[in-house]
Image (cartoon, rainbow, N blue to C red; front, top):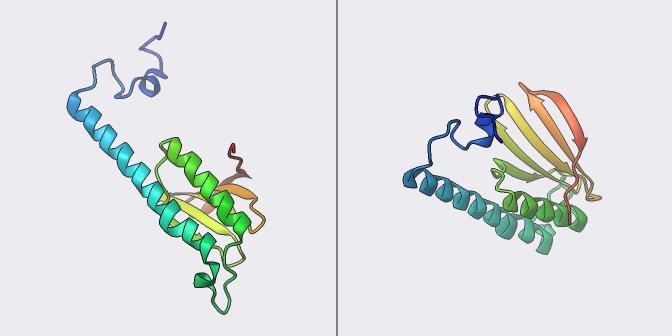
Length: 141
């Protein structure tokens, strides 16, 4: 049985208390969820897939376009995050060395997924511009 007085209650109950969700709050949650899904789909369809189809569009004097391995991994990561309802990144850019960087900023916090040209991904967490965490990033197929 859930002890609502515990510190975890606010994580378990969607609004931090035991009051029932209103129809309005549910429609807002649904709307936000749809907006997130649509934003991820736009990223997948109109950026990542296009990079995979025509990497030449990103060629520049000093820029190596994302490799197929990097694009494929970025699409898999984006699809998994979309399915999980995660907020989409604030930017997705080629890293210039054949990889892809996905980044989300919120205040002083920056979360980045760096996908190398080989398709290997790493999650990096920054606070006030300083790296405070780094780990390999694995997503199920």
